[in-house]
Amino acid sequence: MTRSIDYGKLMHRAMRNLIQDVLCDVRDNGLPGAHHFFITFETTHPDTSIADWLKERYPSEMTVVMQHWFDKLTVTDEGFSVTLNFGDQPENLYIPYDAIQTFVDPSVEFGLRFESQEGENDEDELAPPPKDEDPATVTPLSDKAADADVVSLDSFRK
Image (tube, rainbow, N blue to C red; front, side, top):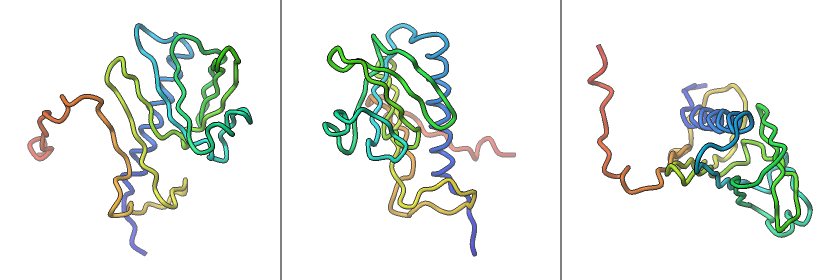
């Protein structure tokens, strides 16, 4: 059996750890300045927990905003729970990191997009991502990134 490093899976893990770190900071210190988050997640993920009426309204995916009012933010290694206000009706949500499709902070033009991988799992086996699929994408929210210079790492090798 040929083994290889699954960079896509490693990037997904690193990006989800970044989200966890950001949410821990928000939990401990609140949202600084104009920061706020748009989080799109799969409502069909088996570990997602949302009110039945929200599940009926958003049967496959849902985008929530954490900005002016949120409560009871709890962050774990697997996901986070938060109470958000839906038309003056507070609802508690649990969102596993694996269910997140996009995480965007428009105040600083930062965004992450998770491209799903067929058969993605948490096994320790290292395997290549499908050749026709970009396994992890960091999505800049401005066209400025399109003009960015690409630096070759070869210049830093000894």
